[in-house]
Length: 112
Length: 111
Image (cartoon, rainbow over all chains, first blue to last red; front, side, top):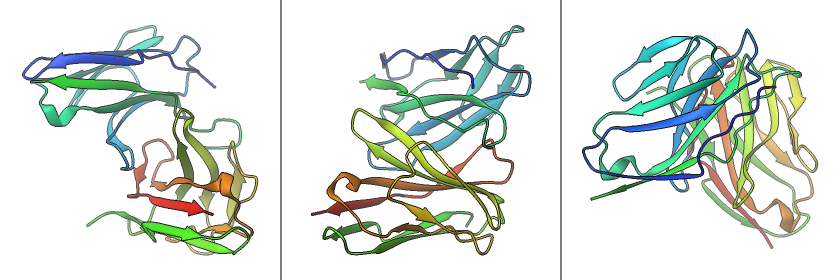
């Protein structure tokens, strides 16, 4: 099971691009990288998932280098409403040997 | 609307009184999971299910039971709740087992 390391917290300003990097040195061949966003007292919300290179959707981009030992979530032009905790998860399908585990996440605070 | 529905949203109960938190998803997902979230401890998995009649323990299963008799429902049962089970609970479901859709949460207080 690949462990992930993320910054505990980050601050940024409205309108800026925010990049949150996650380290996962022991990622396995079948593992995917998934990011979630969570607001206080709400369930985590799936943001983006990728296996290699770059993935982009309407809310974020995910950059994964060739060695896949890290990944970067990129949030373009953030607003105050992007203040939340962001979790990076690494794993394949949920099973007895590969449980989906949330770490402590990164607390992103967007300032006006 | 595709969603995971948990009930109730809030519950206050007394020690030892059996309770069930229901979870239902309308996306025909095979995978379902229960988490609890506590300050400083993050999200911890209680139980998960990979399909009907297939369930397994997560990291903190003690004091909880689950069942998966049909694909859409995955209730969490506390046979004899104790104060240390006071927490915020989330149910989640997934089609592939990789990306999950979470419910809105159930805040449980056991006194």
